[in-house]
Image (tube, rainbow, N blue to C red; front, side, top):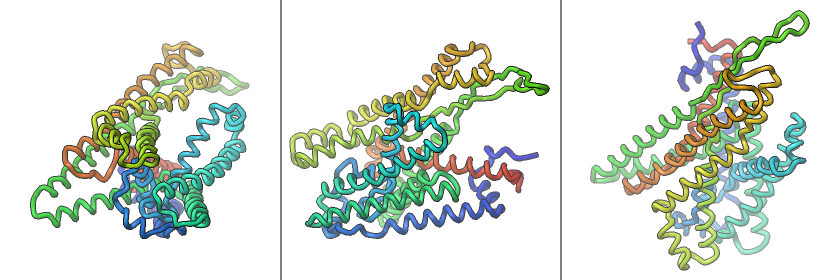
Length: 430
């Protein structure tokens, strides 16, 4: 009897996959490309004054940089050619997704099939490179890291945009020839690098300490991480199944339909985007205030006192933004009218629900409940690391977005791995 791949652990799936030659090649290719991505990330960017970088190491308080460092594996902090990482691609993808809703021409292009989607992907690449140039020059210049002269400014923009283009190319190659979503795996690699560095620091502090407190802190941080990973994994795998019955229909001498199907609706379908949107939104005011008025201005002092990352008001506003962005993204990504239309055209119907508008209203109502749970879950999840940071009086080396991204990437990659095994009838390998 074949084993259910959903009940097979990650390590068991990897052992099974390693026995299959073509899947083993995909795994090795993916690993080598990730190694190349991390190795390229140590190349210094030209035009940067590294004396200033070293002098101000750890003293930067711009909130936006924490988010960039998290996404790039601290490449921005080290001012390498991968300083921008894949973040401009994420931003451009979000921009293009929103523009396809606002601009009818792009919406038609998106719905025109594979060719239209290829054109949108090509436009996204151009937007990514342009956005990388602007972000690199703007952020690095605001920190005062660029050497004097316009030529150095050009070097910083071109080199870091080139690093983003290379990261984008590596991600696309992993998606095409490797295993999993390449862009997600690049972000995952950066997050794991930050986690490794953070826990290494905690372990070093524990061994160097003369009291028991650092060991208790390390144990508490590990416990919080494990609990969050288990909880996020449980919720991420949660699915609301909606039964659909397809009526029998005769075409010639053949009979079609007469079967039951299931529409899976993920409990947290919005992923990590509401967290990223909320963190970015909260990071911009403090960043702009410091860049314009300086850290000693009245606005900067007020912001650091009442809206710092550990304050009640910061946590409250962030939670409200996460809830708002969750509803916003769900409203543009879930189309109940179109789903109801497709079900009706295929001769299907949800039991006890009439086709057409009642079906759309039913799907909208179910999605509303799931969105409410997702919004509250993400809002609570985002506050947990901060609460423990204040309680333990130490810096926890992960954020809610880091855990959510890491768990989602691992689960999605495992699903693809299991699908490959099942398609080759290797799911019962012991």
